[in-house]
Amino acid sequence: MSKKILIIGSGIAGISSSLKLKSYGLETTIIDKGNFIGGRIGTREVKIKDKSYYFYHGAQFFNAKSDNFQKIIQNGINKKYIKEYGSFSPPRYRGFESMRDFLMNLSQNLNITQNAKVTRLIPYSDKICAIDNKNSIWQTYDGVISTLPAPQNIDLMKEFPTLKKTLKTASYDACVALMFFFDKDPKNIPHFFDYYNKQGILSWMAAGSNLRFWTAHAKAAFSNKSLNKDRVLIKNKIFSEIQKIIYPFEENLKINFHSLQVWKYAKVTKVSSGPQIDPKFPIAIAGDFMEGPNVESAFISGDKAADLIFKRLQ
Ligand SMILES: Cc1cc2nc3c(=O)[nH]c(=O)nc-3n(C[C@H](O)[C@H](O)[C@H](O)COP(=O)(O)OP(=O)(O)OC[C@H]3O[C@@H](n4cnc5c(N)ncnc54)[C@H](O)[C@@H]3O)c2cc1C
Image (cartoon, rainbow, N blue to C red; front, top):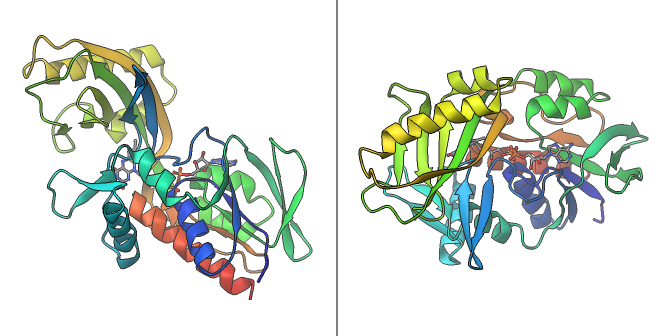
């Protein structure tokens, strides 16, 4: 069956939709507005003497509880682009060299265009027309899967009220992520700090691709309140908390600020309820908001959306 299918978003939900459709013999085009694949599995690269290092300012690790995702992870471990992270139960995983490594390998046979934002979707006969700001030409597709975070997805679903209604039932917490680095390799600090159940504004702080490059994540209460606040104030508040944590371990370590990322839609707090595919047109939605607040759930939702679209196109 030869069909033209558009996937919007190269996060894990978009990649999993595309992989599943490929397994049915259907090629897809993935379009993403960002510079790199991965969406909220965010990696920020730093080059020192031609060697790359990475901050992980989005997802820090992922779990694999479902059979399908476990197969993906096992394959990645065998091919050395995924590794177990720490010794947790249930196990946690990361990309081998970087989180980006994981996605680059997973998507290497997929057709992905970055830096193109889909701005409108409209029904056309029994198909879907889409336009993006890079090509600026209306294209007609036999099927579409849109994987933007629910509140952003609503804007694209103006012509598809059933999906819009499903999207409106989801909600998210924000997350402020502060990236910082040390001048030299620390010797006495652990590779992560878990502050979820402790006092203070931080929830989690962990090294990225090596012990010099770190990201600190602020708790939801602080992050939600920070959305419209002055970035310098937010940075100073988080930075002073980081210093308080690090200096008891190594007081001679210089801590340098790198950058701040404010994720407005970071973590799903309420999963959507309602249909995932339009009752009439071949368009479906996928993303963590359909299944749960993590990488694996986003993967599962992409897989399900691909099944729905495949069935619709029979
Ligand atoms: C700070 C933070 C920490 C996290 N920590 C963890 C963790 O440790 N473990 C875990 O399992 N999960 C974690 N998560 C959650 C996890 O990252 C997400 O659940 C998952 O990555 C969501 O994937 P997705 O494909 O649904 O959405 P996204 O990754 O958000 O993908 C959506 C994509 O759509 C693109 N896009 C948006 N609008 C358009 C448009 N108009 N046109 C084209 N493209 C568009 C975006 O650029 C993006 O790439 C964390 C999230 C954040 C933000």
